[in-house]
Length: 265
Image (cartoon, rainbow, N blue to C red; front, side, top):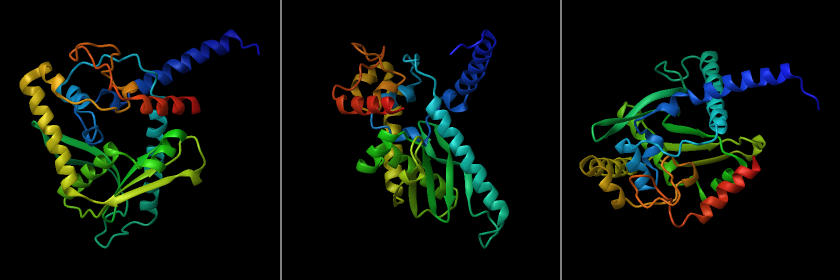
């Protein structure tokens, strides 16, 4: 295949526009922790985030898959917005049936509000969209969504409750990124206010510890595999946690899952 220099130049132009746009997404510049991070099972990773420790693992691939997920979210928001417009006043009080991208605050951690945009609220159910690859989707079907996503759901539920809405259930809808529609997977559980409060209390304790002790608190925080390869503070071989984390010693299973997911792309 013989590609002209004109086409190659235009490819470089387009690549630059795409990469700049993706790297400038708001989520890439968020400093404060959000509901999605409160349930991270690794205390050290959360401690790094809450202490404002500079990220060191900056040589990350372009967040292409995350950008795909973001645009699926946007498409679903557009679809359900049109549904609201087609049938206004589905609720008795005239409020739209589908409450989309509601900004909710679930409480505070060391003086910082924990806020985030909830994907969807419908008649007491708090929904969250996830757009995983094939290997990860199969893992969720087999093992469930895991601590981080479950806690995220309950924390968003608490945010809606504090905003005056009834919350009965949380639902995580896994929509396939690279498979057919029939492969989608729904996980749901009754809303548990205490679980959200416990997660916030844990994060507040970590925040207070790192605030009081600074980087000397890092060795006191337990490490647990949590997608270590993509952790902003991963530094293989590090002997000093102030310089970065070498990773959890028991990450073989997670690393294998991540590698298979990358191969499947």
